[in-house]
Image 1: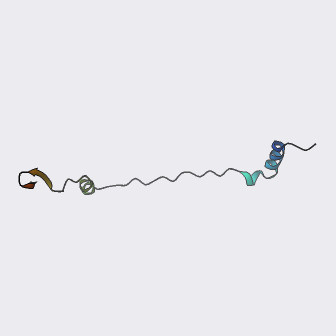
Image 2: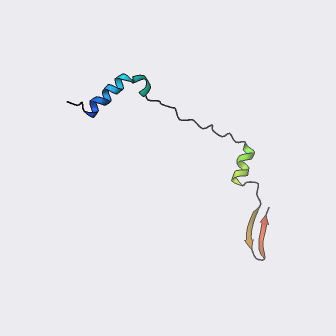
Image 3: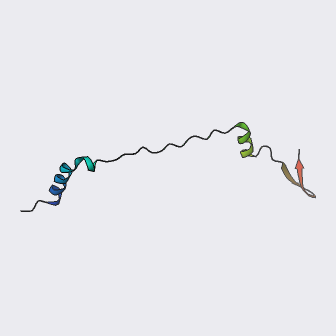
Length: 62
């Protein structure tokens, strides 16, 4: 009688145990980005001019 597929797989695993081993790789960690205080101010737009709507167009608020 022919062995079942499951039995055949078990026999193959025993014969080739070293080559079938699972390979686990650790996920690569991203480096956290270090920003200076000036970079953060630029990103938030602190140093940009502020304009307000007023009669006669947009005026810069100082």
